[in-house]
Amino acid sequence: MTTNKQEPRAYEKFSRAASRCPNKRVYICSPFRGDTVRNQHKARMYCRFAFESGCVPICPHIYYPQFLDDRIKNERTAGIRYALETMWQVRELWVFGKRISDGMRAEIELANDLEIPVKYFDENMEART
Image 1: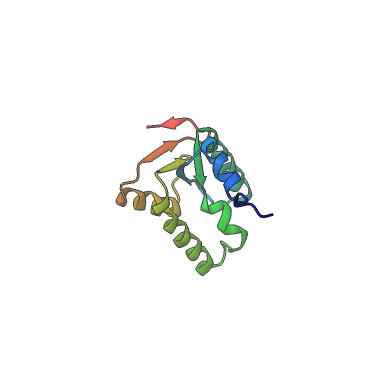
Image 2: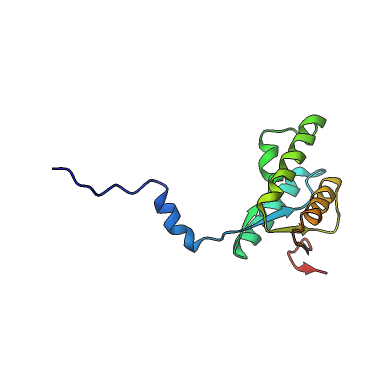
């Protein structure tokens, strides 16, 4: 005897849980070059802050260095370009820290051109004006 009841799709259990998950995407903008280990650690903290603020953090400089080498010019350029392409997916850009690197400046300028709101925070995740 067969039943007409379909088994739930594998993704549906996550979709139902999604109502309890954040859905506002924010782009995390912070320095990467220099002390990359320390800067990635800070970026992870900023992502956690965004998550705890009810947002989905998008942080390309945590993801792309996993397979691109920032010391190789064409790979760094590719990473920045790929990161900029994700800007169309976000609702806000969150800038962390005092220093604005060249890559961060490109992200801020693109956000402004796309009319994406930009919010500034210090390294302790306190809002700046």
